[in-house]
Amino acid sequence: MSTKALEHPTFQRVKAAFPSAKFQAVEYRDQATLIVEPNDLHAVMAFLRNDEECQYNFLADVAGIDYLGYPSKMPARFAVSYNLCAYSRDDRFFVKVYLDPSIPTEGIENDPALVVDSVYDLWSSAEWAEREVFDMFGIRFNNHPDLRRILMWEDYPAHPLRKDYPLRGRGERESYRVVDRTSS
Image (cartoon, rainbow, N blue to C red; front, side, top):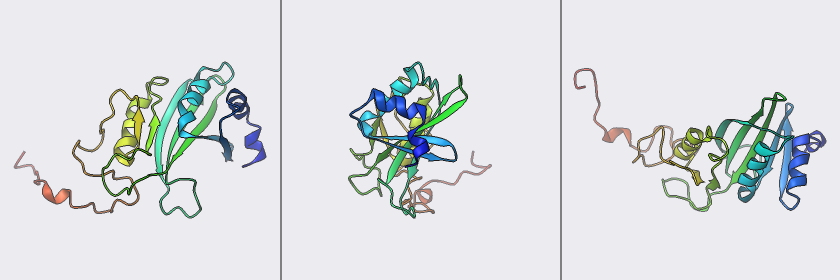
């Protein structure tokens, strides 16, 4: 944890607003990232949007990350990263939450440990981005208005951006009829 990240004004405001919460701060290439616990995520995100000095009024992206096989030790296997922007100061701030699966990740089972609260009620731009993270990684978002697959078909048997998913698939393609120009 760098000293400069600890001095970031947004981190200081969040720490003052949530004195009992556990946070970590990281800075890489002048970009600050606040790491929060899953249970504190929604409250911290609401604070970042609504606080007069923070004013992160735009959610640019929500991304899922799978750290399986990562060269250095990570706190958990999965992460959800939020990219926030405050246009009034031309400032970008990242919030990350780590999640560790409680069951093997090879299939489509709903893991109760891979759940965070949706931020759709704070930024409507989160709707499709959270659906993509759900579809590709299997991370679910509580209170999402329409959490269903967005890229893969509804009965798809896995989450293809998990690193334990085989590169050639698990035979899904072989069970579908090939459609060419003459058969359509």
